[in-house]
Image 1 (tube, rainbow, N blue to C red):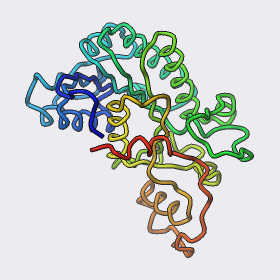
Image 2: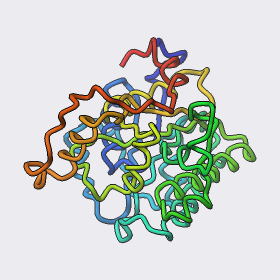
Image 3: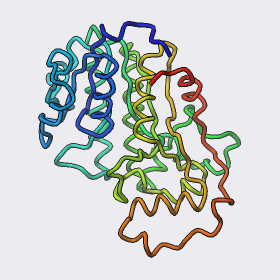
Length: 300
C-alpha cells in the first residue's frame, strides 16, 4: 500500500518500546523513514539498548515514561502525530493476576487522555489481544465465527480466573470509551499469542489454552507479521475499529505438540509423537478477514 501521506514528515511515539513488539516497531518505523519517540518504563530498562538502532538523535529520541505519571506521557507524545501503544506489566509487578486489570485500565485511561491533550495527534494504534474476544459463555453455541464484533465476557473471565482476557477486555473498552468521548482517532489490534523467541509456559495468554484449542480459536501470530499489521493500520486512512491479528491457528494435534515442545523444551523429549500427522483437525471458529483485506497491498 502506498501511504497517503509523506512518512518523512511524521513523528510517532512507541509506548512501551522496551517490550519485544515495541522494540521491533521502533526499528521498523525508523527503517521506513519515520521520526520516532521511543517511550520506555522508568525502571528496569537500559536506554543503551536503543543505541545500536539509530545514531541519529534527530530521528530517534528515547523517553522514560510512566503510565501513572501523566506529565511524562505528555512529554513523550509532544509533537507526535501517531502513537503505537502496547501495555507492558510494570517492572515491579510482572505477573498477571486479578489486580492487573486495574493497573492496565488506569494505564490505558491515562495514555488516551494524554493523546486527547496532544494537539498534533492524528491516530492511535492500541494493542489489545484476541483474548478480549474469545471468552464468552455462548462461545460453543454461536452460529457465526468469532470476529472483531465480539467481546469477551468480563464476568466469565473473572469466574474462571482468565486474568489476561479480563485485563485486555476492560483496558480496551476503557480506551474505546475515552477515544470516542474525546474524539481520538483510534484503531485496535487484537493479537493472537505472539510467537516470540522468549515465549514460555508462563505467558498469561496461555491460561485456558486447552479450551481455546477445543473451540477452534487458539490463534498465534509471528512478531514480524504483528509489526507489519500495526504499521499497515496506521498508514491506511481507511482503517477503523478493531482488527483481529493472527497468521496461524493451533487446530491439529501436530500443532499442539509442536507448541508444547516450544513452551517446555526440557520436557519435549518425553512427549509422545503425533501419529495422526495433522490429518484430524478442529474447525476454525475465528476470522481475521478484516485485517487480511486491509493488508493485501501493504508493502512491508
